[in-house]
Image (cartoon, rainbow, N blue to C red):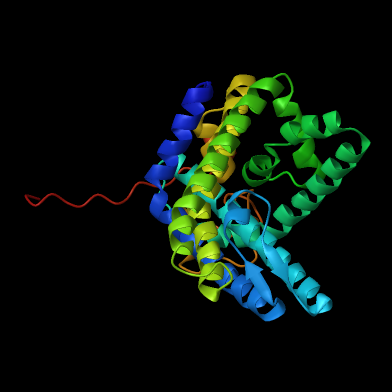
Length: 328
C-alpha cells in the first residue's frame, strides 16, 4: 500500500465497488427493500395525500397532508428509526465487503451482514456520539462544526478495523486526520459532490418519465419515488463507504506505514478460517477481534491446534522404529 492522491482514491474506490458489486448490491437490497416497503405502507396509512414530482426533484420536499397528526408523527418516527438501523447495517456491511475485497478475500452478503449485525450496537453508539458532538459544535459556532465533521470522518473505519468504540474512535479519527484536514476535506467533498449529481440525475431519469404517465399523488407515484431512492442507494452507499475506507487507509499509510499485512492482522483470519476452525455455525462465546473474527492462540479461545512451546523449544521425541529391510 502507498499514499494515494485524490484521483487515485476515487479510482480505487470505483474499482473495489466494481469488483464486489454483486455482494454490495445484495447487501443493499436485503437491507433497503423491506424498509422501503414498510415506509410505503406507513406513508399510505398515515397521510391523506403524498405528492411527488417537481418539488421533490428541486429539493423543496413533497406536499403531504394528513388528518391525524399523532399517527403521522408516530409513523415518521418509525420510518426514521428503521432508516437509521438499515443505513448502519448496510454501511457497516459494505465496509466489511470492501475491506475483504481489497485484501483479495472472498466476500458474501451473508457474511458481511452477519458482521454488521454483531457491530450494530457499537455503530449506533458511535452515531449518537457523532450527532451529539456535531450538534453542539454547530450550535456554538458553524466553523467548529465543519472542522469536526472532517476530523471525525474516519471514525467508522476506526471502529470496524481497530475495534475502538465511542470517544476512543472519535479521538483516533481526530489524530489520523490531524495535519491532513484539507486533503481529507477535498477527497470527501468531491465524493459527496459526485454522489449528489448521481442522485439528482438518477432520480430525474426514473421519476420524470414515470410521472408523465401516472398521477403525482397516486400510490404508483409513491412507489416510484421509493424505487428511485432504492436504485440510488445501490450505488451511492457502497461508493461513499469505499471512499471513506480508502481515505482511512491513506491516512494510516502516511502516518504509520500501514500495509496489507497489518490490515489482514487487524481484520483477523476471515470468514472461511472461522468456519474451518469452529464449523459452519461458528462459536457463540469466544473472544473476537474488531471484525468479529475469533481470536485464536489465546488460552481462553478454543483452538484446534495447541500453540508452540515458548522460544521454539520442544521436548525431544524418540524416532519411530525402523522397518527391517526386505533382504534381511
